[in-house]
Image (cartoon, rainbow, N blue to C red; front, side):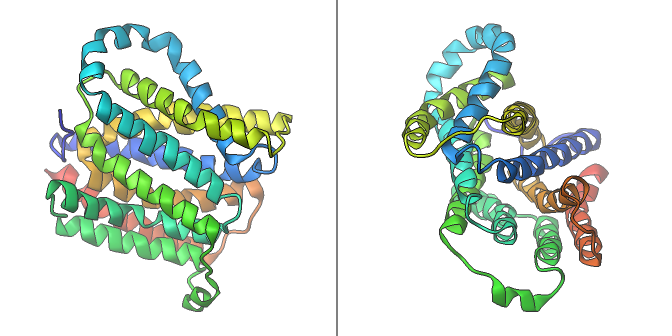
Length: 304
């Protein structure tokens, strides 16, 4: 079964874009929480706890779907394994590890490459040409991301440095782009069956790394770190992955990937609201450009 590449009604597309906006908001919160508790919970341990918790939350609701989908799961185990390893295990392990050492500016800049990578991988693997409106949207939204990262000051480029943490974030970006374009290959099983199997795959992959990490780095379980683990296991995991997979099936990987550009915007706004960081003019400039870039393909989709 292949995912839809944009077919459907304008109302369906609008609903999918709304879901993706919520997804990026939840993922922006995930990055802030991961940075906030990185001194208490090491990266592989946090990723392992995230997906173990998410699987425990979904377990009471997925049993009958797994039984009904058993034959399809066995038949398509390779693509399910791939999605679990690349999009759940590798993506989060690389991202959390990178956030230990990289700066917020570098991480946001690197993650802004996701929409472009999705367009390129769609072309490379599936021969799908990007529509002009998608290219325009990526470019405009990308300018908005740069405006936020560099405070609308091009001279800030000279202070950018690329280190080990940035390399790890780049690996997470490649992993997520591969996951997004690969979703078109997912089998015709219930959404809960898919996320349960991919979560389980990630847990198996991450377990030895988390165990090794625990022999070297301490874990400090405080009220804040426990609440952080609870958050990353529910909202940006179970809820966000379910919504993201459904939206990609409706509007396609290219359009869904472009919505990732909302993440730096939401991250900046959450930093203002939750961390008390100041709100500047460059936030407004970036917000306007990102909104315009995301709106371009959305307007065309709704008009169909």
